[in-house]
View 1 (cartoon, rainbow, N blue to C red):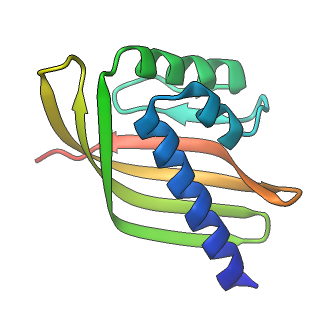
View 2: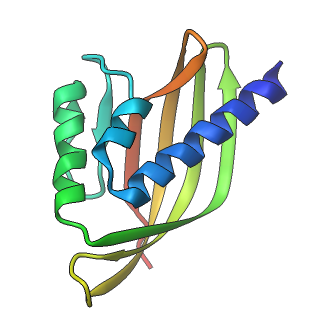
Length: 131
């Protein structure tokens, strides 16, 4: 049972990063719980609380990013009942314009809640890794 749930969370976490890389808000919308208790902390940003604020933060990122690619390392996945969390390092290559490439590392926690038959994001927190 736990192994199956870890596999489910692994798949939804991959879908989260696929949505992130695609810069597609419709894909991101499908992965989040649309609740007042969802939260998001992007590196260097203030806390966003509630689905409208969280969604607006993704729209702002997507509208100001030309491309973004992730390589995840140090991935740890845990499941406890209807909650699951993924801790990983995001190795990011991003472009804000067609020629300006930026590389960074972000230590991230993604928290998922099982609602019915699906796992939905309820919290994303990224902290920059200082080199």
